[in-house]
Length: 132
Image (cartoon, rainbow, N blue to C red; front, side, top):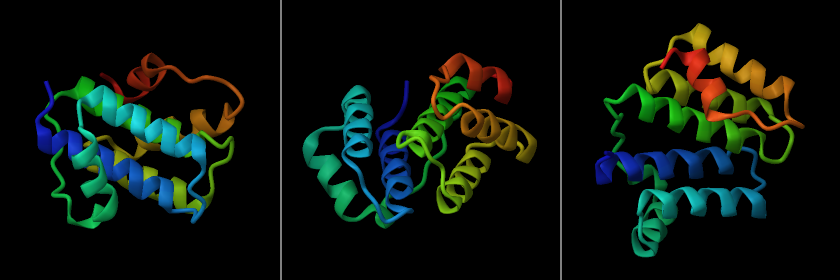
């Protein structure tokens, strides 16, 4: 079970990632909102996070499964527009490492995501790469 702070951190990270390429597209917004709903983040908290994303205290979950799922969400968002620009990749790397994955695990996960932009990558595939 994730804490409220872990949920808010995850939503904030997704918003930061979506904003990196300066093109916040509808698919990204829908994806982030669906994750927030799935996590139980109410609309009031979501709006506060979105308006002041930098003020959200970063909290990393303890569970490897939760970390892998969060990294999967990050990679999915990075590729949702079927492209991954350098800024998105760099922030995805940073976030993956903040979640506790090695540089090698992060690179392998990013590579498989980039190599399959036109395909669906599953949470299980990412979990296998990051060893959860």
